[in-house]
Image (cartoon, rainbow, N blue to C red; front, side):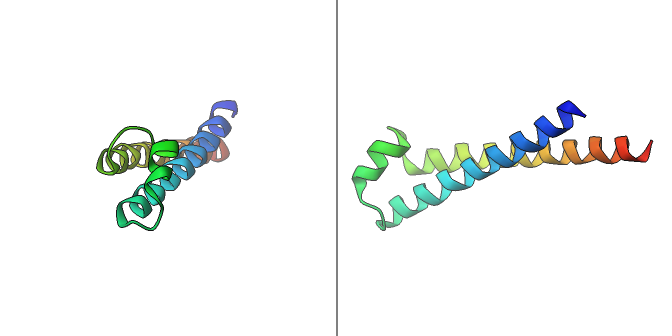
Length: 78
């Protein structure tokens, strides 16, 4: 049960952080946020690289969340 809770918490945390980075990168790419924001909060990578990496993290967190839900349902079933 411990790893199920940790997995669910990590999935929510990583998904939230990935979505925040994707939104920030899109806003910087559109020019809504100033370029200083990019240098300070997103690092030295391009916005395309940030969106790509954050998408991978988001998909990974979805898989982790699915595995945690499967673990929870198996525990409740037996």
